[in-house]
Length: 156
Image (tube, rainbow, N blue to C red; front, side, top):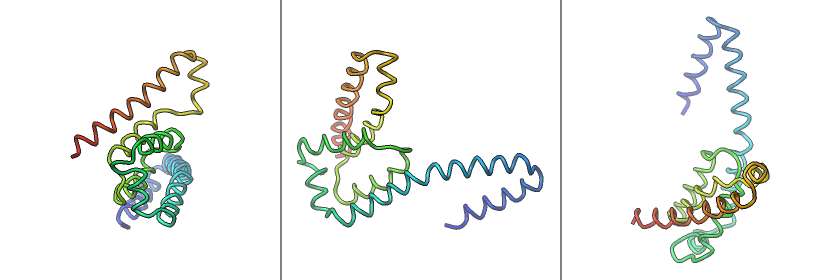
């Protein structure tokens, strides 16, 4: 667990001796990336804590497991659309949900619907028009359901 951070400190230390200007710039860039990741990662961890405190595995199975019905489709689709931040910060939460009984289909639907970004829709509409954006968004959501269903069947 400490091997990677220790290796990074050693590498940065060696490079700082050889090229202090470039190493300082690289360290500053790495720090900015880390700080940008901190908020979404913190949000995901808070959500995981809340899920562990408030939801029991039986509730997750009822909402996102087999036989969840329309709720098992709409809930992950909406969550995927409104989710923010880099996708990899959501992986621990999705794994946790899967371990608690969520099916493969809702997780696939969530991941696929991350392509729909509500805050970008006005820009898309300005460039492509209402009709195109509406059809594209509808097809993306419908495609997510098809992908989720297919994933579920292939994983059986």
